[in-house]
Length: 342
Image (cartoon, rainbow, N blue to C red; front, side, top):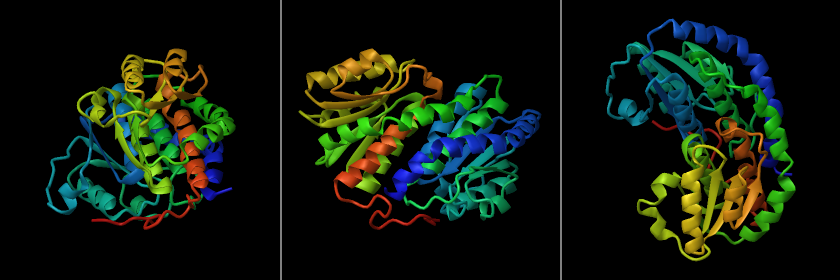
């Protein structure tokens, strides 16, 4: 078994461990932040962490009603802009805590008056020495270059943080058990992967809370399988990108039952007209019936909690596809675990 596959299987334990270790700290942090007049939240990250931050943006805006921006680190590191960050909360997301540009943004944001939080897997990293508060992912060392357990751990931290910054009841304690159920789908994913052994390009689609997952699966397919993977919202896909679809072109969709259902169904019907290949990760029977193939998720998973359990079969798909293609998912060419850019 590859390291990537092994680390995928560790996720229910990692998520439960993180909940138990961090919930009291986050409760106190939430009380403190709610007493402040936070008017803006800025998230700064790269790679898979940036995809987790994209999810966090949707979640935080939906639950707290505070505008959330994804930072462009180059504004700070290349253009030396000094932003006005009084009443701002700046959250850096990095599995290693050693991203030079992420840490630079945190340093400059703190100097500009922002309260800073770091979400990382490394308690002794450079990031932890910069920020006002650290939220740890208790994942243990992640050995595979392709992030899996740290990605879902980062997403969980956004659930936990959102639950204390808002009045919305978020039942994130259910997520580890949903993830354990998702891991039982490996044999289903293995059967499906065999049909995509020669896939060289595809499109990955997700909307709303699962939009970040579309970016994350596309990244996994590019870095572990060398598949050219574009990613879109199902709403945006009709505005031009649909033109690239032709007969048998693969489209992979994150399609939970919920508020995004209509746009996903509209897209699936158009894909059927074009005779494109569609693979849906879904817990909705109508979406499944319109898809060429589907991975059936538990109907008990509410759309609001779907992003973490829904990414697990996608991670399995990427890891097993790499194996089918004879590639080493643990050591993608030209990549390293820690990337330092400025």
